[in-house]
Length: 451
Image 1 (spheres, helix red, strand yellow):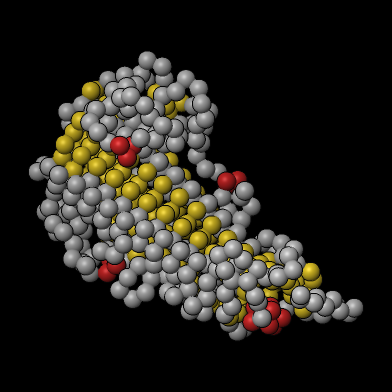
Image 2 (image 1 turned 180 degrees about the horizontal axis):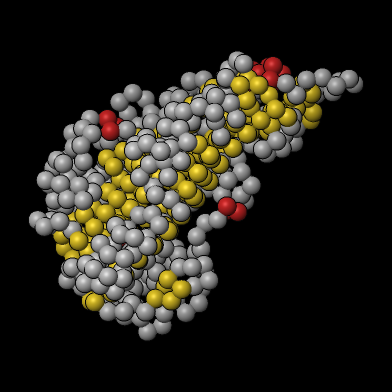
């Protein structure tokens, strides 16, 4: 049985009974005491740093692991009330696993990293607003969870969150969810992404990352808010608004972009065998969904050129814009063996679908309206009605209802996560007279205070 000592005189380190006999809760009031407590931590222990501002002049080393059922938790006593400044920050040792880092406000110049060989760790409910350029948080450990953080307010080159892995590989099964990415205003032409998932030399490696339920606002540091440069990933149920950054599959193959809600943003892709499905994309300008340029037929493992889109399926999306709503960048190598099926494409003028001459694309089941179709389609009013959340959905009597053609089982749930039945409805939304519908994410749904 562990004994707990409570001193009569206030000190930097106070140990109080934990919720179970095998776990301690340790409250500290200095960084030296925090380091001492972390050096002694056992599975299930929680170490909390009292409210205040702390300047880190030496690295805060995390060396002790928890277990999957009893993690070691290092936390601010109250979320957002313990601020880390200075030239150093926390560092996960290689081999450390099942550690939760929670609730801190980071305002120093030191970047945070979860290294390769440090799996199953979690960064949650933190606030990152560093005073340095470069990549603020880098995750290279397998099965890392990054959730309910805010990354905000920068004008310098670099990304908010980078996911890498060991040299010549990618971290596997990283899960990024319910984070708030806000106000990246780097003014250069490249290098200001909110999330970068891989690098050009990692494009052929499978990551199996899941990027979901994140909110991006003023993601203006790069044309790519989410930049995917690895293979076999899922980007779903995110909301992007008031941002020039798109969801971009820049390198890699076999990724899925599903159920995202984008206002003034869009989706662009290169590479092979992707699925772009059930997204709601409303861009008041042009180019809401873009077949990326092909500078080469197929990228080599370290190529930085643009890979031609091959065998990409764009299906069951609702895409709203002005003209060139679904567009292509061109290049010497045109999209090959792709599919554009069962989408609602609504514009205001001009040609709505403008893929480059020489593209090999199968078109079926699409509904176009508001301009010249540019492709074989049903050019009819889809009868979309704006709901309370500002989303345009098919109304009763819409020609989109039960009009889907072809077999696309990966679209079996619409962007409300409702099961489609019979002949699917064209577009991202399956019409139901009543039922639960999704709304775009707001600040209340993400970040440190989110449920």
